[in-house]
Amino acid sequence: MTTDLDGLTALVTGGASGIGLATAHLLSERGAQVAVLDLDPSGALPPLRRFNADVCDDRAVRAAVQGAAEALGGIDILVNNAGIGATGTVEDNPDEQWHRVLDVNVLGIVRTTRAALPYLRDSASASVINTCSIAATAGLPQRALYSASKGAVLSLTLAMAADHVREGIRVNCVNPGTVDTPWVGRLLDAAADPAAERAALGARQPTGRLVTAQEVAAAIAYLASPASGSVTGTALAVDGGMAGLRLRPAER
Ligand code: NAD
Image (cartoon, rainbow, N blue to C red; front, side):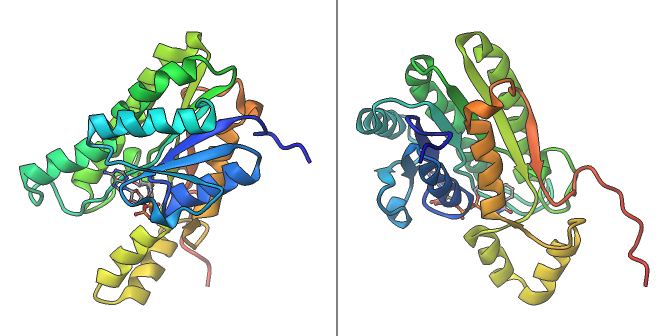
C-alpha cells in the first residue's frame, strides 16, 4: 500500500514521549523513515531510530542531526517538538529558570533547524513543524515564562517561513491546547486534587475534554505531507476550540 509519506524521512525532537512519540509513530505508519532526537530516547522503539541529544547542546545536536540524516538518507521533515514547562507569574521564576526554558523551547528549535537546513534544502518536499501552544495566543494564568517561550516560537515560525519559502522549505506550527501526555500527567499528580484538576483543564476546552497526543500528531502529519504543499507560515490550533470559540454557559 502506498501512503502519503512514502519515500520521505523525518526527524522528531522530543520524540520519545507524548506528542513527539505519537507523531513519530504516525509518520512511520504513513510511510516515512523516522528518527527521534531526545534527552532520553529509550521510549522510542524500532522501526524508530534513536539519537540521544540535549537540544541545548549545539555540538550534540549537530552530531545527532548528521547521524539521523546519514541513517535515513536525508531529512525531509523536521518536527521541533522538544519542550519543557514552567509555572508561575512573572514574579516567580528565577533568572536561571528563564534562561533554561528559553534555551530548550526557543534556542532548541534554532539549533536543530540550522543543523538540518542543509538536508532540508536538498529535499523536494521539505517541511518544518514546530510544536507551539495555545499559550502563545491566549493569556493563561500561572504561565508567564512558558507563554513567553511559546510566543517566541510562534514569531520564529513566521520568520523562518518567510526566510526559507523560496528554498522550497515550508515552516508551520501546531498550537495544542491541554494534551493528555506524560507531562500533563506529572502536573496532575502534583495537584492537590488530581481528578478535580483534570476536570478543570478539560472543562476549559469547549470540547469538554483534553486533546489526545494522536490528534496533535495528525495535525503535524498533515503539515508534513505534500498534501499541505501550499501551507506555510500558519499556526494550526488543535485545542478543542479554546482559542477561537466563546460559548455561553451550558444550559441546565
Ligand atoms: P513530554 O514531557 O511527554 O515529552 C517531551 C519530550 O521532550 C520528552 O521525551 C523529553 O525527554 C524531551 N525533552 C525535554 N527536554 C529536552 C531537551 N533539552 N533535549 C531533548 N529532548 C528533550 O511532553 P509533551 O506534553 O509531549 O510536550 C511536547 C511538546 O508539546 C512541548 O514542546 C510542549 O511545550 C508542547 N505542548 C504540550 C502541551 C500539553 O498539554 N502536553 C500543550 C501545548 C504544547
